[in-house]
Length: 336
Length: 129
Image 1 (cartoon, rainbow over the protein chains, first blue to last red):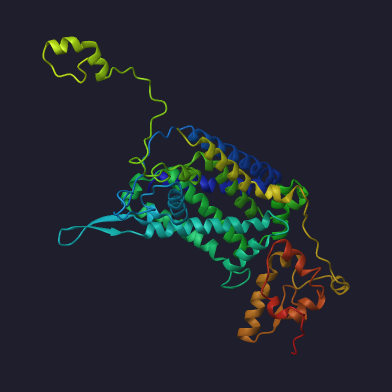
Image 2 (cartoon, each protein chain N blue to C red; image 1 turned 90 degrees about the vertical axis):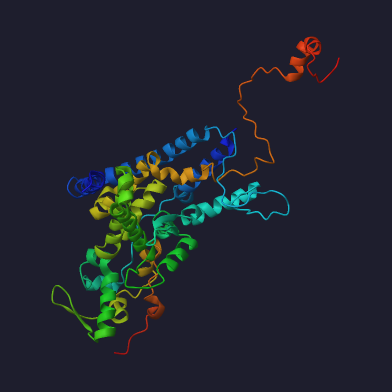
């Protein structure tokens, strides 16, 4: 047993109990359904922007890209455009591949000692597989939730729903994204627990978002497939939040407490987001080892805030001592 | 040197995307839709189960009915009060609720669900049995 994940798990359980007791017993639907989501959204947007602006002040004087291919060199040397980009557009392609396909993670290798005593570096793709499953499943879940925040629901959102549920299992039809999300989060958690070298470096800040996102996925799945909630009443509240036309308090209180646990988890995730490692959503765009062109041999990058150093060149030195140097028989650049 | 301008532009785009539902709604109200009951449904007073339960669970009930009828040939549903119903979307549900556009579609469109029940039962065809 490890305190780091126990405390995170305990925190998520306490959060769920707070929302459940707060709505089921204390009837604080207005607090959990209106005030907390608005505050969370405000904290998310304001603090996200603030942290990005703090980062934007960081100086980037030199090109420090890490390359994984031949740089642009002599014309007859074949180069790798996207692993060692030279122009802006090559950088854009490299960044797009990084952000959309997690290329750095795909290069993950594991060092192993083979039976005959030799070292081998094998491709290790499990982390990449579950990471990309997790991110895209979460993205699809997020986009599909737009049906609760937009009215009329745009065709694109409905089309995404049709694709996501095309297996047509049961009613409500199983959406693949929800189970992919919960499954991937579970694997990403078990990986931290079962691999000793990962358990060693995992902190509570690593476990907490995993538990929280699993809680969100679980309450969502629970509401959709196991105990049903009044979906139109839920949409009346969620759409009411974005249109500032809230339903009556009695209507809010008619929605199952599970819905408020789900909403509270999402609010906590939003408010926690800008203060956590989840800020890599914005940070990935600012990776200096990925978003800079590898052009240091073609373009001179002068540090713009170099201190103006007072220099004394050789020419000036010779001007000062020419006569003495000639007298002593030392070679000089200019005779007179 | 830094890329302040580009980063600020990116942050503004991000905020615009995140707050998109607020712009899209433009403060336009869209309250919970009220399905219209036909005179026949009003006269019957009670549904197969109570209204709140049906509201949340009708899709699951229909799924169970479909499995019972199609796979087991079981066509009689006994509800909690002991009343018997023919397990049939067309002959039982749509018999009272014959106004699909004002009854079924209102909530389905609001929640953007398109049940594939209507792939076959779309024109309310009466089953022969």
